[in-house]
Length: 520
Ligand SMILES: Cc1cc2nc3c(=O)[nH]c(=O)nc-3n(C[C@H](O)[C@H](O)[C@H](O)COP(=O)(O)OP(=O)(O)OC[C@H]3O[C@@H](n4cnc5c(N)ncnc54)[C@H](O)[C@@H]3O)c2cc1C
Image (tube, rainbow, N blue to C red; front, top):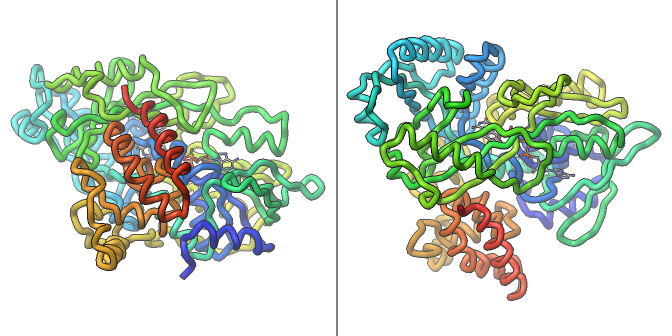
């Protein structure tokens, strides 16, 4: 089997001359397309300018869901499609996903009936891929399950099921799955321009950001899956093109588990300004969010606005006994939804459709916009199918609906290595060869040195941030702890990557600076 090693894959990039597909962007959308394309048998190359899932795809609410909210908006086909994908993802990546019970606290009997009816329909729409029946629970049961919920005026609750997952771990495992099917994926490589033969796109110029070298890569088709950067790539093709994307920011605050003290999540279906707020148990913390703020600019490191932070704290405080304050926040992170821009310039981003669009320009650039993590597989299948219908590629069938994702394991151990699935055994082999790898990085964490070694050798981690933000999730669950762990991680990575002291110090400084932005 091909090795998931940047040096080896970079060599293949230089040597291969018959690429079928170049995918630009290593988030959920691009990785899904690369897995679909490579597993159909197409020679596939994926190029990511930073790390896999550095953008929006590591900053989601971590729900694998049909979207209860879209049901209320009457978008039944979108919900049905997402519910099917929810079921498939839980089947194909059991090591990264979990069936989560979510409780809606109800403060009137009318609301109880309303949500119970809607969620029974939601269950029905999920058909044989359902995760469990929703039900009404009494006030007494609700308080037992959610001991930190405010009891005043509470009448009852409605419990339903959706999935939760680890988004950036799924991204890494998808990248590995793509390579296992013959594809090449590279992080820290950027597409800087598109190559045209006549007026048709025939490839892309790729800059290796680690060495500064550039490569001209020819391919039958180029897919632009760059999320909120979609317009930038489209303008490499057509400088005068109008915007297809309207970024919408959503933030999350991470709190200590004492704010929830439950395995169940809370969903507040209608906040003061008509949004939905979740409090979800994630690792040993609670994730609270999100917001929906239209923006006119985009970046890889968006920052939460004060107004968004105040909104999340205030709303959570209305429902929780222990009111969260700024000083309770362990980490704050923001992400940008790549929503399809409306022709009428409608600013109400919560009303802009979350369904995806595949657009093929006259020159043949394929751009994918919209969608969500849950439906990444279907988006990929639709994209490849449309390219085949347009004769850009020969006809080959998609096999992803029951394709097991790298690490697939139904017998997952508990504890710190659980999310590695089948790779957990290989990490234990590393420890057997060198017992010092079993040491934790500090007394405050369960993360062990072997995980850093594994991430460098087998998961293409190139920086301290890659490890602390996306191979493990410390930056997102506790940014102060992440800063404390950075020197130890840098020390191990320096040895593994063959780097020097200067690299190590630069890494610590850069990571510390970044992580400060996750602390309030
Ligand atoms: C706050 C929030 C909460 C969400 N919650 C959920 C949820 O609970 N469940 C769910 O299903 N969905 C959720 N979503 C939606 C989901 O996260 C996104 O739809 C998905 O992650 C978008 O992935 P993407 O690949 O399109 O974009 P991205 O993840 O942003 O990936 C695009 C990539 O392209 C790269 N790139 C850009 N330009 C170039 C270039 N020139 N060369 C090479 N690479 C380039 C970028 O570096 C980036 O990594 C949420 C979104 C937000 C913002």
